[in-house]
Image (cartoon, rainbow, N blue to C red; front, side, top):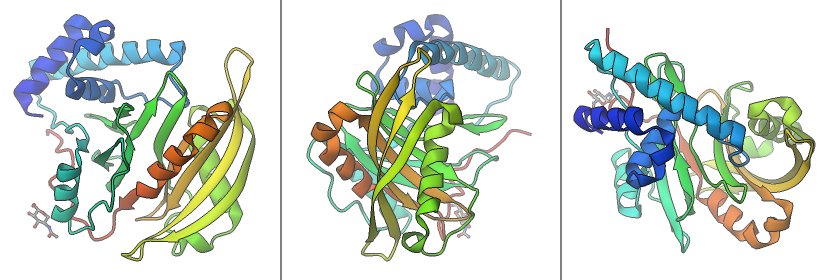
Length: 291
Ligand SMILES: *[C@@H]1O[C@H](CO)[C@@H](O)[C@H](O)[C@H]1NC(C)=O
């Protein structure tokens, strides 16, 4: 996004707020969501929605303030989508192209960690065409939020999470079950560890990609605790790897009654997930901070 587009987006956000969000073009809508800086997980609820409105308005006001002071932050572009574009970028990084995009899916590619508080990771996966994509937001303070796609009305989600605790793990497929459990519990508990209970890993399936990269496919289930005192049974499939100095996961989940219908979709999403850090030159993608 160039600076002029960004300025008009910021103005549009300030003048119209979140209420007219769906009148924007889809690209602007993605950008708008990403500036909100709030990662939605397990479906949007009204609290999250109003927080998002608040963040959107205050962040756009803050950015306009910066612009009026002559400070031009360098901004992240919306996630790259479309098979040709995603594969062109993968080739540009010297990486294998996405083997096959499942029918009815859209591939995305995003650099997570453009901000100074994170280390960069190339994240790519394919998700159902109709799912709404959220990408990390960057301000002068650094990066917030994550790469996520979902059908929030139904509670369907695919969410990227970086677990720095274990550092780099050499063979992710040869680890004790506790590492996969801990990684997923950290990922699911992003909104607080009291948000879920009865977490259980039900199946492990190691995968080695043609280029030698390893992923552990993990089936799991848990109960989401809603603010209103309900428990919602959820089931999911995750793909866990380790690139750079962390363990990374793309976890997907739906409500238990939807799992039968959605299982193949969740497996397709996780099977297309790739994450790369090592040996990649990210210098053109990182946020450049004004002095
Ligand atoms: C990384 O890319 C930038 C810009 O494309 C280039 O200036 C720099 O030399 C590259 N670094 C390495 C280590 O190749």
